[in-house]
Length: 99
Image (cartoon, rainbow, N blue to C red):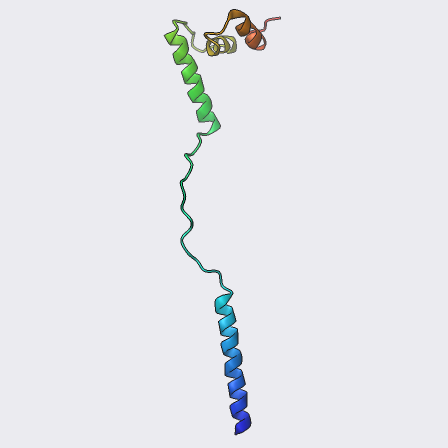
């Protein structure tokens, strides 16, 4: 009988040890760290449309009449309103086919 008590005591001790190890090795789930979230950046297409709308608005404000649909050369000139003529020619030479 003393041998059975020793075996039972050793088995219980082993089970408690395994149970204790399994409980301490689990990662603790908790709330995620919440910090300030950055504002979502617009998609590239949305950004391009917004810039194009601003260019059109600036051209209309400056009194420039733009046909529908607008050509690439006209869009380039409208985007560079307010710059000296030489700068506009340099920047838009590919769009306008200047040589």
